[in-house]
Length: 258
Image (cartoon, rainbow, N blue to C red):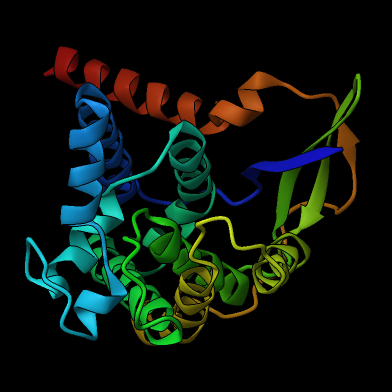
């Protein structure tokens, strides 16, 4: 059985430009990584990834160890690592950016990534294995989303052999399953405590970063546990695309009138 969130029922009132930027820069850097020979790619990961022994110890580092906390957030170890992170950012990031504005969201994102890196380093301070990926910062977005929109419905793709369907599942269930799974994750090179650190940071910091008029623990917009056939448009955000096209057309019409 395979299940994966593909969209939510929350429309944002502003364009998530910072999310777009993060997706673009992570994708660009990953493509750059893939142009490198294997040995140089590994060297780049060691040079720009977070090495706990360098951050908290005396391990030599190509860059300032604290600077690598930020450079590591934009690197990924494989296509699935990149796609998984970017899909979660695409689904949940727009509402969090909308709740606090672009500048504060960028600061929020980076701070969550810092918390994530430090918790992993504290748990395993002697590790010389570099950590890369946006997972810790994105975990912060998930923590914030759980506090703001616990009853929002997330469209989850269920795939069992040849049976494919989409079910609306409350966000608190989807995100609770995700965070609980981090405590039972196996050691496969994944920095699970970084995910936990980012998640907890986001859940706490959202109260201080959100606009004062934004309420916590908001209600959902649709009924839970309704199912439907999988539609690619739902994955691509059909409604958001339509809104964007309508905005483009309206702008063009205004120019013609002038």
